[in-house]
Image (cartoon, rainbow, N blue to C red; front, side, top):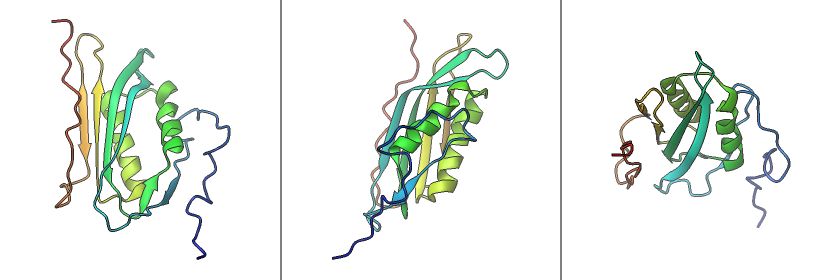
Length: 155
C-alpha cells in the first residue's frame, strides 16, 4: 500500500531549531489528522509560559492549557513549543497573549472546537486568568476540566 507521508512537510521536528524572536516570526506546522471523523480532544499544557509586561518589561508567568477537537489538522508539537517560547521576549498584557494564541491556533488549524485557559501568576498582588473559546463544545465530546485551581496564595 502506498500511503502518503503526512510528516513530509515538517521542517522543525528532528533538527535544530532556534527559538523565534517574536510570535510573528514563529512558524506553526501541522499534519493531516489520521483520525479524521473521530471525536477526540487534544490537550497541551504549558506550565512555564512567559512573556513580558509591555510597560515595565518585567517577566510575566502563566500556566496555559490548550484543548482542541481536531478537524482536518493536528498542530505539530515542536512548532507549538517554539511558538509559545517566542513570547518570552514579547511585550503584551495577559489578555492579549492568551487570546492571540487561541485565535492563531484557531485560524491555523480550523479545529471543530478550541479553548485556551491562561492562568497567570500574580503581579502586584492580583492574578489574572484569561479564557478564550471558539464556540460551543461539539456534541458527544468529553471535555475534561482543565484542573488548574484558582490562585490561593499562602493562605
